[in-house]
Amino acid sequence: MKEKEPEVKFEKSLAELRTIVDRLEKGELELDESLKLFERGVGLIASCSTRLEDAQRRVEVALKQKDGKRALKPFEEEPGEPEGEA
Image (cartoon, rainbow, N blue to C red; front, side, top):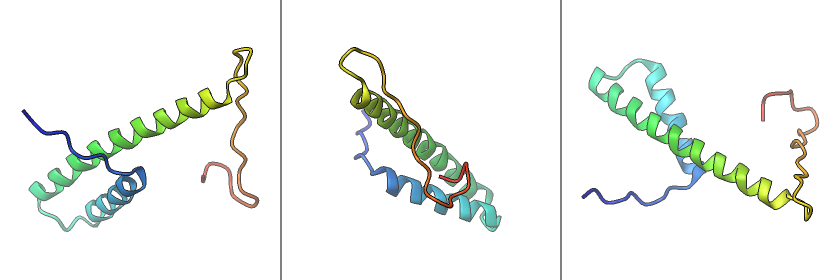
């Protein structure tokens, strides 16, 4: 039976994913190492995606009004921040 890995914080997973992408983009790794990093990256993407979906559900629950209707509002962008670069 495989032991469950300890939960890693979202930010740490995202930082590791960025490092993996940087290393893969350089193209200096051997095939086996590239495949191992790619597989690790896919796992990190799945983990981060699950955490983001969970966070979205928690926000929706927190914003639900007493009458059961959602009071969802889009996140405000930072002043001067171009759209799509959050």
